[in-house]
Amino acid sequence: MSAEARFTFIPLPKKVSQTLTNKDNQENLLKWGLKNNLNVKFYNFNQEFKVYDKQDFVDSFFRDAAVRGSLNLFMVVDRVEFITVPCTQVSMRFFDKLKSEENGIVRCGYLTECMDEFLEGMLLQDNLRQMMVLEDHSAYNLYDASEKQEFIFQLFRHICIGGAYAQHDLTIEPYLDLTKNLYKELVEVEKVARTNELRVRSLVMRVVGYAQDRPLLPSEPDHPQNFMYLIIDPFKRQVAALYHKFG
Image (cartoon, rainbow, N blue to C red; front, side, top):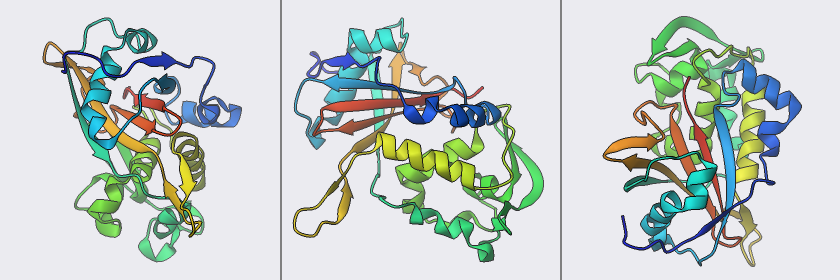
């Protein structure tokens, strides 16, 4: 990590995720095994952020005492790894392919069932979940590699798969609705001058903080449902930390 923290952070405890605290959504999160395990925390930061500041930013984030206190990190993070997650989508039309009956994921409004598969503790009991995870599924390539890297796809996949004791819905709409609302809450969009086209302003990183060469947050990051994303709005100088522990 860099010798000095270039950014300082101020937790915003009064700013909570309206999506995750909504009563109806809370019922779904409980059913899907995500309640209390899927969390969002918001922070302001003090310095101007540029794209080339990413390593300094994540180092400073995990080093900051206020951040560590808000995340209950009792060990000092000495190394942070990150990958930049593409985030360009501004419309839920991105998921239209899933709702087209010709692709075999949804039929007459319901998710199509198949033989149960278990992978790393995850129950995959319909074609929607299997096509997102299993490479030998007939619809695995319905979305290409670049589309699957998009933050909105990853967010949707996390929500669909859920926790270890998930009870899944029979239709796709509840998952799409939660994805839409959470994505809208986390990701800032702006209009391009002259064209009025929408574009994403936020930058997204998936991060892992290490202490003494062991992953601290998230722990066991090799599991696809253990994650932490930092969603940065450079204009507002605000960052959202979205994280989940599979269990």
